[in-house]
Image 1: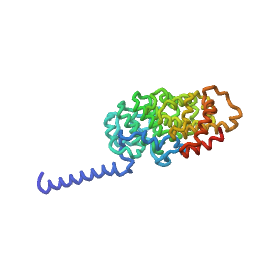
Image 2 (image 1 turned 135 degrees about the vertical axis):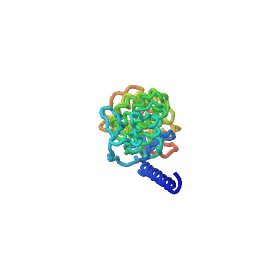
Image 3 (image 1 turned 30 degrees about the vertical axis):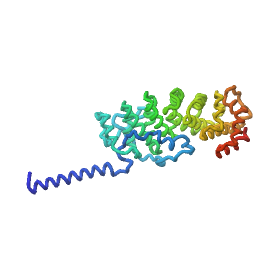
Image 4 (image 1 turned 90 degrees about the horizontal axis):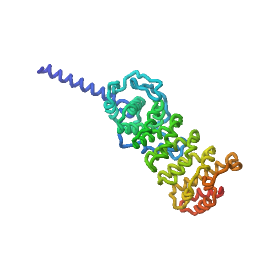
Length: 374
């Protein structure tokens, strides 16, 4: 086909091709940045977000405010064909196929390819999160599982997605991975649950896993990433008083980890113990715990400030709770070797009084408020 007519066909073909490319561009890029196809990368873990989104966020304790604002249910629930989330009792049928044209015949690899064209820093929408949960539930590849958990954990740092993931039945899907034999996968699952637990409604679903998390924390390797991730989750779950009673039988174990762990582990255990110590209903359980006498060494002046301030606050909180509703008037019987004997013995009193000359102003200020109560 030659001459002017052939040139015309070529020009028309170029115009049609350009128009098609522009339409595809508009469809994939015209939505807000957060609506791009989600990406899964292993360079940033949910654990990295822990400092900003972890323990105490529910009551404003030294935590970054939640990002994303208040969740609004302005989205329609859809699900992948033939896939049920949550307890599996009901399936939500999608009215429009997702962008990857998910079908039973589509391989997991194709799904991965569809989900890796974008940026993991985006806030994912409901459809993208649902695809991610499907991937997490359907694949056995440990690398893909970890990447999916990291992406879910990062997105769970945003309050809007904390609610969406719950509504999609994502919490049991994530929690199922804490049973994984791979320790790195277990850690990533705990990190994701940690961020999800900042939402009070999510805690109602997460609480059923508290006992399992405790077993992993106290039976696993000391100072391990899994142990720290589990402690962070337990700290979040005890910010309010609602679920603290579930840790009653593990209090002595907490003190054991406190005394044997390294600095990071000690700080994390103390954050958890401080949550418990603010609740009068937990005071007796704390004081009954059998604690080695080496606990008193934490009140020595050379102890790191972040640890020393917390053990002083622990002493203060327990004393305050004892005075609430006449707890001091009717004291239960405590056995020798219990925390009660350590905190109310002369050695502890002497150590705290000696800290009045501590070189750090915050420590001195804390001691001054405690001494009158000794």
